[in-house]
Length: 102
Image 1: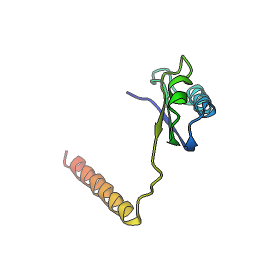
Image 2 (image 1 turned 90 degrees about the horizontal axis):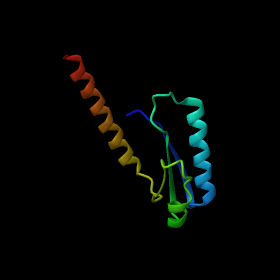
Image 3 (image 1 turned 30 degrees about the vertical axis):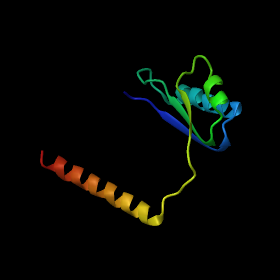
Image 4 (image 1 turned 60 degrees about the vertical axis):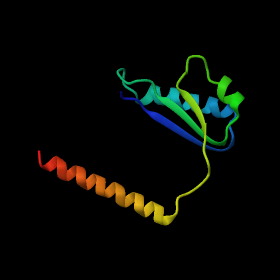
């Protein structure tokens, strides 16, 4: 299921202009980079304050793969980042070792 995901991070409330902007990005990306056998590109807007009315009604009729969601502004601590990097490193090393046994 090959498709591309474009993510737009917004600080503040979602507006009609934000939806139009991501729609333009998705159309441009599809025109420049996708192959005929690719699934439609998905546009995702993450914003600190989601306007439900805008999210529900401003998506263009032929573009059903644009979504808006709310996020919290919170950065991980340095220690949390270190733990996550170490965890990913161990997973990659394990996968490499398992692949070498076959």
